[in-house]
Length: 161
Image 1 (cartoon, rainbow, N blue to C red):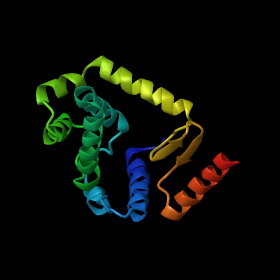
Image 2: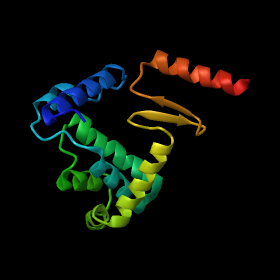
Image 3: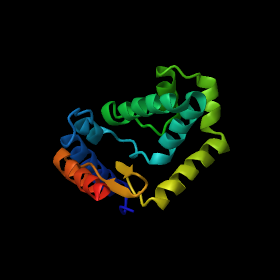
């Protein structure tokens, strides 16, 4: 998509820098990310790991795992495609390592993620962050609060009419 890994990394890092600039939390360690030499992670390993956590502990475990792997990726700048990082995150939120590892490699876990991706595709989601409202409205991108508020107000006004 970007031509080569270096161009991809530069483009993705620019995205994360913009996301951090628009965030109140400032959790994205852009400067540390630039120094990392591992390939920039693609989403499937993290999605599968989040699904494994959900299978083990429901929505709460999914979101706890999501928060932990995001911290590993965005703040600690670890390679979240690596099994040892995924397992560390699982253990950090109290998931059983053995069961989690089995689910990482279970075809059914991947199939569940693929179903979610099909739904995202049907809704027109092509990237993150994306917000779907009432299965009819899509807001995409790391937006400044004012821009997001403006879009939400427009949707709210349409709903009132």
